[in-house]
Amino acid sequence: MPQLTERQRTILLLLIRDYIETAQPVGSKRLVERFHLDLSPATVRNEMSALTEMGYLRQPHTSAGRVPAEEGYRVFVGQMMHKAELPTSVQNTISHQFFQAPPDVEQWMTLAASVLAYQSQGVSLVTAPHAETIRFKHIELISTQGRQVLMVIVMDGGEVNQQVLTLAEPVPQARLSQAAAHLNSLLAGLSIEAIAALSSSTRADALEQDIITLLVQDMKRTSESASGEIYTDGLTNVLGEPEFAESDEARWAMHLFEERSTLQDLLARASTNSSVGGLQVLIGGEGGWEELRQCSMVIARYGAPGLATGTLGVLGPMRMSYARTIPTVRYVAGLLSNLVNDNINAE
Image (tube, rainbow, N blue to C red):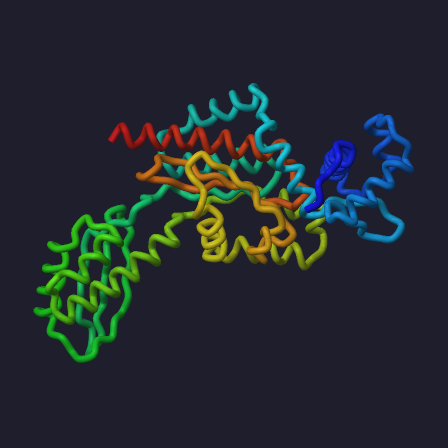
């Protein structure tokens, strides 16, 4: 994107600030009068035209003022990321709420979702902490009928997956139990990577090799989708915004929250490359998430690195209050990280 002059940057940031508060296109005269700019409306109008040509603003109607484009919001968020702070009084209120909550993960998740929705006036999304490294614990192979076998896999963190396999030929239950017992002794406590490496060197027979291959595939799927239950709050906050007054947008928002698998996948993909304590802002889906084309999402990972982590965030229109949402997400993520670490150390 073209470099901005200091004056253009100032005009852009003030325009976005005004638009976030009003949801109305902003004209040059309003900017000059509201922010007491030492510039003429004509000068501001020329700069706004330049910002539009550069892709930072857009003009919804021929005679209307300007509204921020995605690139404009990115500049605005860049200003907010390290400068926005949550007032001390709000921090104290939030920490007091968590202090009063019972030491229960489900209670923490519900409270975090409620606090985020209230403070940001957006939709909150919180996943329960889960083990970062999926490890094998136990497998059962149960003959059902003919060539079909029920495979039940238990992970070290308690996750249980099952699927029906169709073998090349019928295998007696005694042989299936023998294979399961051997695999349980061979693979207990191993990660996906360790099992995959072992499969190429072990002397397991054809049946056990096939089971190991399916086991690795299943563990990978579990690892990719292991974001746990999703706690949400504040959907009515978003549906009440002008951007969602259109029925199509309202139906989209409802659909996204009804399709929990889609929401789970979105959170998992969005947080894949982030570290605990890190925060990222997705504006308009960043070209990769069609589901977010009309929205912004502020997300952060929390927990104990290498042990158990979760994701939390806020979803709202691109016009969301970033100055409030960003520090709120960051602060609540920090609180949950402390709680998870304390819980692990107490075990």
